[in-house]
Image (spheres, rainbow, N blue to C red):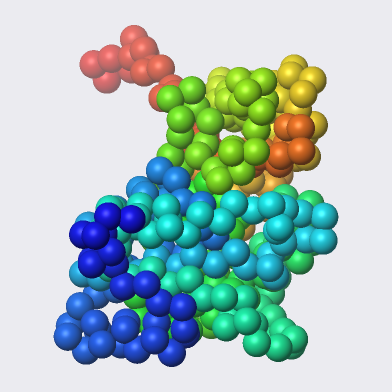
Length: 309
Ligand code: PAF
């Protein structure tokens, strides 16, 4: 951590100090940008922090590996913890505050209160990872309560999470504007994720197929496919072509409700989502597309019988 980085970044671990720091900035008329993370920051997080820094006076990054959102068989213990590097990246991207509370600070006793955004969490990631979104919603609600009025930046990479967070902010009347930021990708299309670090060289080489599969789905929509199941099947077939992948789900859904429409209508926005295991790593990705509008009907020839009438 360079000295200048150390000087510019205020590192806090207590909830009281974090809330007080943001209150003090607001009292001076400064707007707050909040970037909640699990740490192991990469260029995708850097884009969120830079955007927050461009749009807000003060940026606070939170780093907390939230045990509530990891299932019993998931990677809580092996999740990368790289706080010094995270602090350096956050400061370089323009953050003023790094809040990294210990688990004991966030959950000093048994968690008796939990937030559930029903309706958006029973399918896709929610179906594959029971309880995951309750853990996400609970910790995000806590962070919003601690942070107070702010803009909060989330990546579209976790598309269902974004929908859940938007809804909880609205339903619980948090004074928080949720800002969605586009997925950052490697040059070969692989979406940036802290979990990419788990991939072997061979797995890393085939991982971009997930993005290619989404592009196949978008091509099917562009070619006029109106059955969401057929679009999802086009995505799934591309993933299945690489035997190292084990598909979890592929879906074409309404981006607001995450429900599968009966049929895709002209002009309708569609979100394609995919999740698959590659070795011991589970990867997710998604892509937005729009159903093409019907091409205009050819102009009718003038009826000679009517001409000059
Ligand atoms: O996407 C993440 O990094 C986490 O799920 C979040 C939103 C910080 C909650 O722990």
